[in-house]
Length: 211
Length: 211
DNA sequence: CGCCGAATATGAACATTGTTCATATTCGGC
DNA sequence: GCCGAATATGAACAATGTTCATATTCGGCG
Image (cartoon, rainbow over all chains, first blue to last red; front, side, top):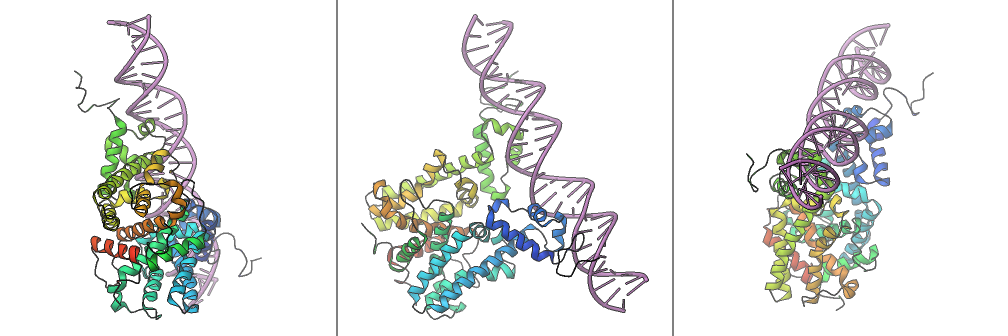
């Protein structure tokens, strides 16, 4: 009596282990800290020997890179959607920033992983490198206001795009590390924070700020 | 025959082990990656048993926090110096940004440690918390342009100060992760990057940028 | 001086981690 | 039905943070 093809298998050859590892790891990231994500933990959760993972990933870093790459794609999809919906460049960038911060707030451990040292050092891998340039490319595209990305001009616009992204990433990390409140300052909503960031980005820190 | 008080001691009671642990760990951070800094490694380097460390620090995280706190103080000193030397708020902020990026470039592993998860989660400790708020407070003070920090008004200015700091921190991390060059874009000097960041910060991303 | 408690250092343990390797099992094509 | 390739196992290894009983040294008090 053998189980059907799609049913859960016991013992050897349990089906598409690669996908199950990725999905289990993603689930772990949703519920726990990034530090809780270990190779052995994922194996335990899936119910498989630790060494089995090495048949599908070269090592732990590659597993993490694969998860991060998927995160990049999720983020890209969010940004693409906003980018293709909103015509006005400024309104678009505002929406992009909101989406960006909300993504980080919704997936804190995943976001941390995406910009962790071990994953970033893997950006030579095409899957990670290309996907990782995404949020960056979007801000360059905003610069052109045209929806087209011209690498030949990126040398000029690069630092400005970098600044836009730095602003968002820095604020996101502050958010996740719980530093959005300092002293007795009340907490700031994500959307309000995004608006302030874009006020600074678009018009400078001096304009519009209360004295 | 006993060694003099200041000479190197062998065996038990080797002198001020706490300081030697900190200094050895700092030296390690100057020459190696952050991931190379382990409790046992520091103990080995000092020539002491791993468990000896627990007589001077509660655990590894506290050792790391102490090192990070010292880093905060170094950074604060740099910023204070610029802050008290340059009168014009804008010129001062430009200089602060340059100092900040250079500090990160000079001490990459230490900078990473200072803003790592494990250290930031220790900001409840007064030594870490107060020192860590420094770079932040400086940007708030810039807001006032007066050199005085008034916590009662920080609720208003907080998001703007956060934006300024996010810009610097995000760019610093990009620098350290080697993402300052993307594709065939030539590398950008640290000072030039700082200037662009402050152009964006002060006048907005639209002003002064080449089209 | 001598002694005793406190401070400090040691070394052996333990649990956990990533990784490797020989072995065992299952799948798929001939 | 068989054989090689793919895959899973379990035992091992080195390294990590941490704890604990033990050993040593320091400092003060008699």
